[in-house]
Image (tube, rainbow, N blue to C red; front, side):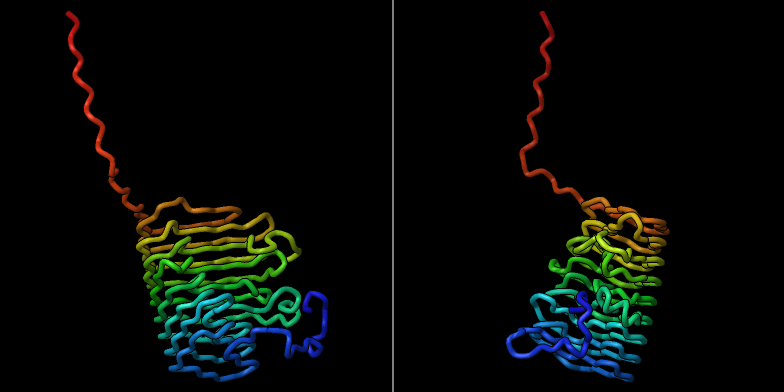
Length: 287
């Protein structure tokens, strides 16, 4: 309906549409506190502050597996704190958004000043995610002192968009965060998500910093995929150690990357379980 330009007040749904709404949604609210609740098995985004200001999500536990079971999705909201919470989800644990395609550009409100601290992420497509509905942009995201670890957690920090969704994302910081196992990479930027380069609004990501981050079992540190016309630039990692690496980083259409005081520790190769070959017999001198 958004792509067809249907007016918002005509987008009506009811019995027979099977629309899955967000479970808790604050819409155009100020001074919001959601604290000390547990959410189990909701069929859609669990906590969704939209166009809201001064939002605190504190001490919540979310355990919900299934499609689109994001944990907390601040959308076109500012001054948001998510702290001391547990996320075990079937989709992104925290996903920061700002509208999709033409609707996002029409409203034109970025998400900004988002703090995620002392949270624990288990299963999910990503620990802290920006996108994919990010057409209004995003800036000033701070991730501090979190723990992320699960064989079913794909990435720690994830950015996703494409040339239809667009959006400018800048100033993303992660520090003092401990990552155990993730299945794809510590940091993923996917600008080839869904429609990829097919559109008129190439996305931009600039100024990403990781400091004091450790991981113990990720295949790679960086998986960054752009395309000509999109921007991925100024990615900086410092004072960090990444262990258990098995695959090379993937970098496509990427600008500046700076590593300072970074340790990359490959996974130890397993000893062969086959018997060692027998030594060749010594040559007998010719008579």
